[in-house]
Length: 307
Ligand code: PBG
Image (cartoon, rainbow, N blue to C red; front, side, top):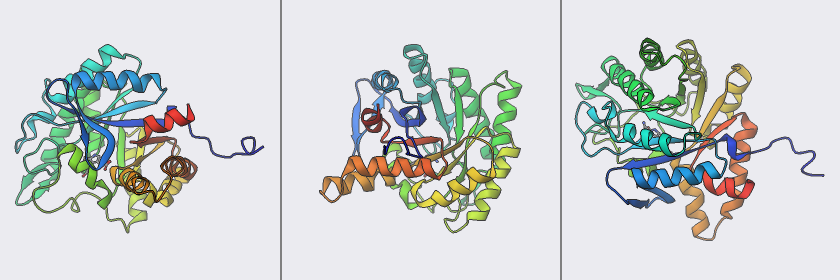
């Protein structure tokens, strides 16, 4: 009876699993603050993707840890960069698995910021060129969809132009449209080795206090050509997922970020909370709020339970 009258259903096909790809061979390094998540070399990443595919998960989103970082984020838009090579390997091995790429510079810059630095701050418009080049190189390598997470103004338009001009007009853009300057990204920055070396990201990511501004950011990204929009983090911003759902007739994604994952797992490891129930309850509430796509580090665990 309960199942019959249930309003919200969560399915593995809604999930996108974030994966971190690093140099080397046979590397499978667990991330301290994100148990059961790993930095994976390309060969290990491919194995992981075979498993993800078998679980019926909607797709993966790839983050790269380059061999070297520099001020120009060269590794981000190198056709032979870590993510570009990873895409080709995954597409070869599991052609039917959806491969999304995160388009950003912070993993590739020596200073850990998301763009080119002038006078101690990120220069928006120079950064747009890097983002467009990165998105294009991901598409060329075989990515199905690109997801800019940098929060520069005008990046969706810049990426759309670059893709269209090069024959990739069918590649959609999933925009991290309402992305907040959140404390909950802490564990990710350990995983992706992308902690800013000075300052913080508040000059380009949003103030957690601003919901109306979030709607304006989403609207702007849609005007620039975004196909899917994302709210990030998820749990502390359920109201904005709901507002976006009511306002915009496009698919809405939410990112249950590293800190959200870490809190649940840490509490569970202390015996203070039931991990499986907390996982399912949060995924259900994110879906109920209006997200049809969830980026989550729980993707595999949840798929096993829901399978
Ligand atoms: C890159 C990026 C970040 C996350 C996704 N893409 C980190 C940041 O903005 O500092 C965070 C994801 C997570 O915490 O799980 N800009």
